[in-house]
Length: 141
Ligand SMILES: [Zn+2]
Image (tube, rainbow, N blue to C red):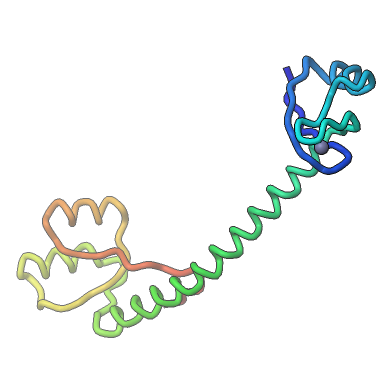
């Protein structure tokens, strides 16, 4: 069985099942395929129409989300910058330093840097408080 999207001469779209393509052609020629809305037998396959309209819908959604995200990203970025302004950058020594601070082996201060997923997990297990900072594609810090 194949499901076809169909449209009548008045652009009423509907779907119908056929055994195969020939089955549709035969039924169409014998005027057995009728529009459920207006009863027209001038029915064509409308495979392209729904594909196009779906694509358009998606593009609009992506665009709308893009705008929203842009605003949210700007806010996140400003926040991340604020956090960094008062913190010391320790690069890939973040896990090491954070642990030292946690256990009182280093001066209590705000730090930021990079940590691997494993390091982050092990820090969390040790009860070290930290937060992942968002990174941005155009971050050069
Ligand atoms: Zn119709």
